[in-house]
Length: 470
Image (cartoon, rainbow, N blue to C red; front, side, top):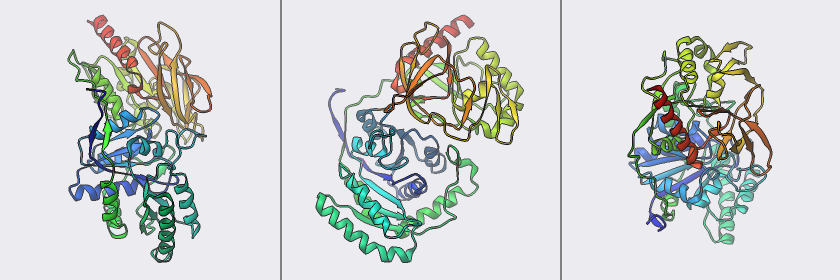
């Protein structure tokens, strides 16, 4: 029965940190590489709405992964996603600081929230570079707020070997005292030396993409060996093995048995951001992705009845996108013929008249939306939102709400007004999205499983397009 709780034993751990830039991704990749080498059959999950980190796990290491986001999904779904992955071991990579989620609310929608919902023990990775003994006070404060006593181990990152030898006895004494006070063990697992050549580059939306590195596999291999040499791996494995069995009662929807419709989905260097669960939600409604490249292909695929332009970095490939005239004409022709379409963030930017890059060059885009976009130099409307469509029979979003996330430095002078976005916590709201009977275009990255009704409506629009086109 769907309401019966099932339990499954999966060794698991979360790598969290006090702040972004602590080295979580390279540590997680090194650990996943080590687990894979030792035949422990790992799967990876990124906490929060991040697109790029899972690419490191999937594309470089060949390890399946997904996003675990407590704003998008409840605890039942989060547990089921781990349990149904079908692997012996799971590594969860945290986001931002351990307690950072919805602004102004401690814990809520943070990676710690994910750990609580899934009963996952935490190893806290602390960037000790530029700090002395004050690092102990920082650790002590974080442990004080660990209400569920999930932090089981501490790893000091970017610390000199000499200082680690001096600091480690003091650190372990402090952790022993705290462990006795709270009745739950937390121990120092090791200290990784600072190595400036084993880091991952960043840009305005986060890490540099995996395919932009020439030596990424070497970096991960090097960090794997640093973990092996400087971290008590057996103790870390014991922490993973002590994770309680996952109790879950969520049943995935059965496979779609009706007619399969095809949607052309942009996927290349410029458009690579997506949630795996979004693709799964499309398949649950009998919609199968067919991938194409707006940079390299001359037209959208044949035999499709919808179009999806995902987010990414179109600003880095504006010249190539602009010069691919046949692709722009193909997309314009399809949309103007009534083919249903979804465009999010970078995909939305591609539909505008123009995109202005940081060097001052303005490139013509598809021209389906009047207006242009440019880099504002700051994050715009950053964070979780709920998007609700305005009541209008011509609006695919009419009267329904879907959870979403915004994260962009570029902004447009024509963001649409078919829906209203509301931030949790502050309640701040604004108009957004270009909408119609057959399209939804805008900056928000929508999370489809939070509103299956929208996907059902989109499929009906696809069916209507096929009927009219035949």
